[in-house]
Length: 205
Image 1 (cartoon, rainbow, N blue to C red):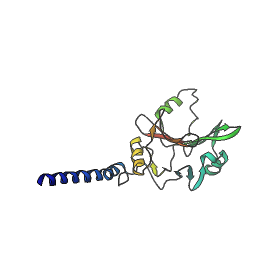
Image 2 (tube, rainbow, N blue to C red; image 1 turned 60 degrees about the vertical axis):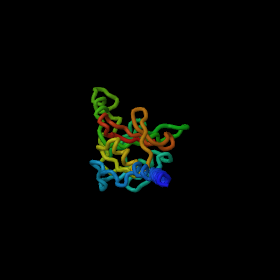
Image 3 (cartoon, helix red, strand yellow; image 1 turned 90 degrees about the horizontal axis):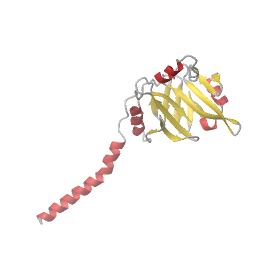
Image 4 (cartoon, rainbow, N blue to C red; image 1 turned 120 degrees about the vertical axis):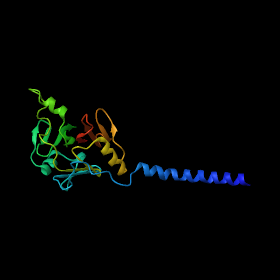
């Protein structure tokens, strides 16, 4: 009789433990409290760029990258420094690349530079370098939020992954020298980091 009771108790304990496993796993996968606000992030800073799903809003004015043209961006951001197919907004650290598809202008990508790249600047400093004017002169001074993640000028890959995990987003995946999410040509985000693991810019395609 005693042996049977012990077996039943052990079986019950095992079933309870197995039932709690999914709850425990969910708790570990998605933290209850949000990560600390990244260093250098000021929610009151302007301009404010909020990226959500497949749209991008600049101070509330929405533009859809895959459905936009260069005039849409110029009407929102103002005059840009144009260099062949590149449009640079030096004051804001923003860049638009316009190419052609089926004989018509095509928005290839839009980039937001949040931090200077030591590697890039070393290339640009070489006399006669073609890199000198290919990027905006300054970095983004405003507030940037991507799919709910506040992006700062000193943000690391680890911090971004922690925020994405908290928000229930898929983690960024490593690619050819950068990290990414989404599908190119439809809607993708490419994140570029320096050797110190800190973000330098994000490219939307």
